[in-house]
Every structure is written in structure tokens, then in C-alpha cells.
Length: 109
Image 1 (cartoon, one colour):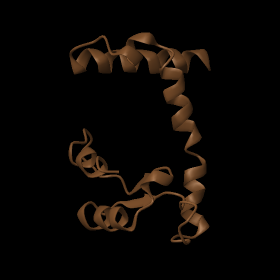
Image 2 (cartoon, one colour):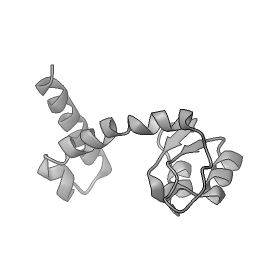
Image 3 (tube, one colour):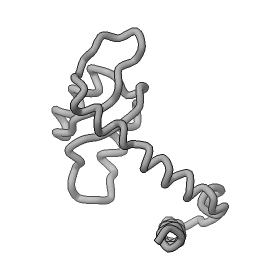
Image 4 (spheres, helix red, strand yellow):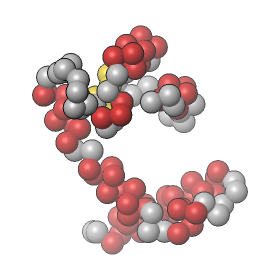
């Protein structure tokens, strides 16, 4: 939770995301307010077990589709060079990431 704001500040793309989806660890009023004030980003996270309901079910429908991203990372971790990060330079690592994504795409066409 402490690295959400630094990650958004160091983003590669120019636009800040409108919504950010996280798991139960990101359920915090302080984080919600901070992201809304500083970045204008809505945090979507399910409530922890001992916490009262802070949001209705409509935004949480987006959380349900989070499995697609997690599945992509699981597929990318089948490539050992990406898991171990043998590449020292970020450009080489990004190139291997693109290559892995292209191989995954070609397998499922």
C-alpha cells in the first residue's frame, strides 16, 4: 500500500488511470482519499473481513475481471528470463516482455 503513490508518480504513460483495482490489502480510507486528491484516481478494492461496507457492488464488478491480468502474469512467468530477470538493461527486459506477450498471443490465435 505504501508504494501505490510512488508507482503512479513514476509511471511510463502520460495519463493517470481513472480507476485502480487492488485486492483487500488496498482497502483503506486514507489511500482512497490520497489517490482521489493527488491523482483523481478511484481505488476499487473489496472490503476486508472486519471492516464495514464502504462501497456498493457496482465498482466491484470491475474487480471480478482482475483474473485476466493475473492470468497474463502467470503465462509470462513461464518464460524464465522474465522471472529471474537476467537482463540488466530495462530496454532489453522490455523487449523480452514484448516477445513473451507476442508468443502468448500467437499460441492462442
